[in-house]
Image (cartoon, rainbow, N blue to C red; front, top):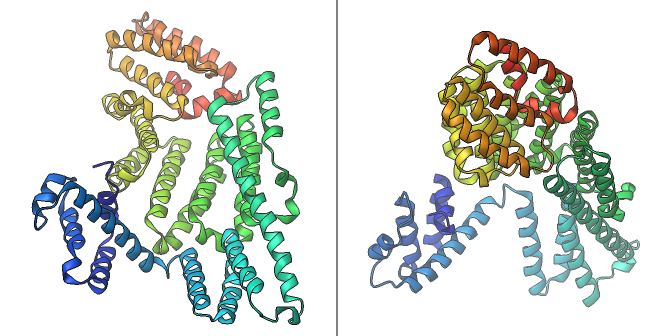
Length: 499
């Protein structure tokens, strides 16, 4: 049941997490209070959520209101047990636990012991770029210093250093937050407005860039790890919107170099690191740089292999998406469609493990990749099967580019299978959609006209001459960045040359 958070949480638990939860529950609850544990077992055995069956199997008469209370209690207890089991695995949990311990000591009246503990964990937080936790710890230290005699002033300006550190960290946290927001806003500008192709587009982008840019953009000398990373990524998005792939690649490489300077952050925030490697690989893909692409993919795979034993499920999900998209793109870059097809079959089988937690757009992106691969292998009916979810769930596609490309690819499949009657209807629908797109690629329009005009060509000799004429037209535009981007994801030119 998609809207049942408790059921989804239980289904996400590993065997060891379920075993730990049962031990935890038996340890903290008396027998008469364990109705929530029975509910846990009932939900664990269900394949799909069925509330009626659950109520029927709970002892006594349980109303829906009572069930809701038991579910809330169970949800809280599962999260509590997960927090306990993961404390030793995740640094943030460990630091927060130590802050809680410091609070307990303080409430016991042992404020000096609390202060010493806070000083120790503050250094751990600082060394691992935990800026927000550092601020929380410093705030607690200041509270103790303001209410009790600690003699910190006698210890080599310890109190003065604490106050100076507090002001500095507050400025850094504000700057870091501003730069994260700036990065999100620039990416959002691309989602809303697309690429800057005309002088007017470029002017609008530069005005937005100057307007959105925070003061922290200029304070590079005070950078924390995340400040610098988000500043560089914002520049990367700016260059990408301008269709300047080589400059975007330069900034993507700077993010990776930044991680190399702070090696521990690769393990601390693997999602950020893997995603950054993927961005770098995309620009190599668009620039047709097979050497750089292979090196980036190997770096990603090696990192995941070395660190995956410590991953949480969210890290496994992110690694699965980007590693597999990266591998598919590599075979597409090399035009090794047989290897890409074998890779696609393997990914299809593994997708079931993660599909409930991967956004629909990404699932459709995999389908689109599979469709382009099978089309290249002349398996047109299979390509149409892969396209079907994209064509029937277009509202889940976040990029209009992919929606248009999928429908153009459908037309190419229909042409190859000689399904000419359906082509006419699909062409009309595509024309209406293209007219609503603000900035389609010129070759997207040309491909639609190409497929429409091909319907009038029936003799093989006529087809050859017709395609030769259009190949010449496509070659005129293929090196322009916007058209190059389109052809990277739907190689219409290669298809015409092949025919």
